[in-house]
Image (tube, rainbow, N blue to C red; front, side, top):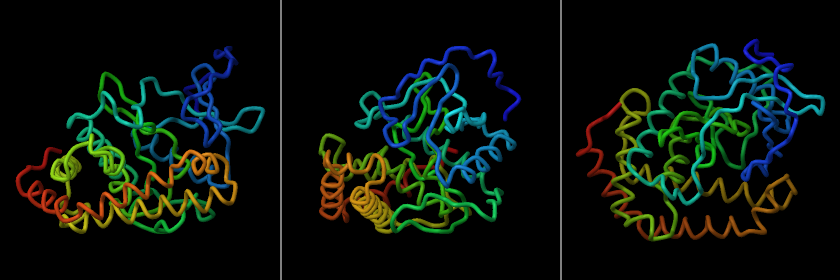
Length: 281
């Protein structure tokens, strides 16, 4: 238990559902968040504890378990962004997420996972890498305060992987790389990808980059997303049958087709942007 939280002082036991808490049955109770647990929970708690010890304040603290066996996490004030990024499409949001992700990756680099860690690996995802990836850096999992990204929440999918695995998913969700043309031309997407990398910083962290390789990373990340949605949906993993019912997998297929059609143009814009945009870390 974390000594910074006094359960006796938090008398409001009313449960308030989050609109996006379907996958983990997430509710708010007073100044805490309650979530269902799984085999991955001890490893995730070890990770969050390490981050707290390192002074990384952009993740919730673990406060224990309630009488129903749910984990108790610190509630982080602020708002999350909508899936379509309405009101959050500016370059400053994108670069803010990139810098926060770099802070996290640097903070977690020294973490040694428990020998019995049971991470929640998705279908086709890497099983090892230089960091523990958050694996779900998306608008609904970033807490914003006064328009600035301040924290990452929903750590259930954290697992070992390369930094670029986290980066590619953040690009998918925040550039974003959806098929809808309302999110900008292929050249504009490439420009924003380069801007993200400039804010994250490359160098020794992820090495040299090439536009086509970056597009390939995003494509691979989308294919694992599609495979996971379908396999887990068919297996009845909570929350995933609803994704199939609502056509999430079909949307990912459209996004993959968009990426294939515009791959060369996006890659050229990334290469041009990587040369033109100075690092801003």
